[in-house]
Image (cartoon, rainbow, N blue to C red; front, side, top):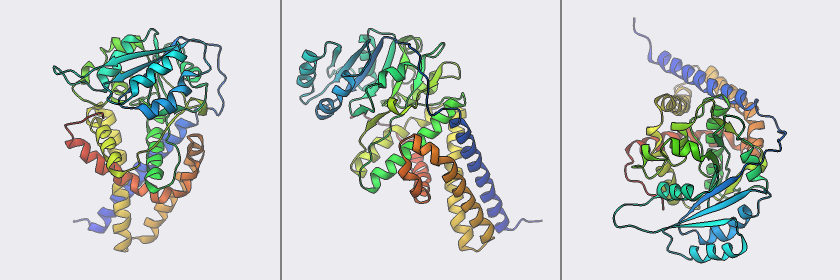
Length: 372
């Protein structure tokens, strides 16, 4: 006996709904483990902040003082001038005269091998004098002068890796709105997974780990042939439930500006998505399941409503999912500095799953990547 096509479509819609509900509830329960306030100990570890900069004159001028002036007694800032062709060397030399805790590492172009961010970052880590490393980018600005203190607090007993959060500054325009939304959704995914003792990625704009972990894993040797993945792929291969901590106190955030053009954003996301296929198999399966179930859910929502197949049930499930998202995500979005986006959720959520699948396909065929 053949099952009618409408029943198959409705069953698939229900399956996607259940899968989406699973991700929603599990992420919410994970974030409930994080208190609004955390009592910090008196721990003061020697920290080396490492920043790679290629042609970042303006960003260095604007953001480096906020890092150099952190309220912390024992830290250095290592800036790797990575083959810059602008006035970055002069800017760094000027800062060096004012801040004795600034260390400059210069990387020059070589005809014998291609340099990239991983090489520059490795040089910066080698030059760092401290065991505890805190990484960020030249276009990032700490949310407070307590950033170093809060991030190093994650290095409690047995912890070698601390995942931070790095939102984008709010400006006008749809691109900025969507990038901020995508950043929050991505953060919810990897932070909730880490809080559930299943870390799988982090972002280099706000990430800390020990020198011992880096060299014990032979740095980026396992994926040095890829020009990207210095943050998420390194975390994916080296983080586990015992050695990873999460720090999402507002004072520990680092902010940066979104790309201002679709072309620049496409190039950035193409580079990032290009390494997703190298994640551990279990992580790839879960990420694919989330992306596909969301995309199919919205596709079948339109198809079923247009064909008038159980429209009351279909519309009711969509509204129920949306209400749960707004209820669960309201507190999380507020904590992650994106409270204004919750009211745009229906529209942005649709674009988010379209984006995941489009760039997921782009990432599968991406081979040649470049940093800048």
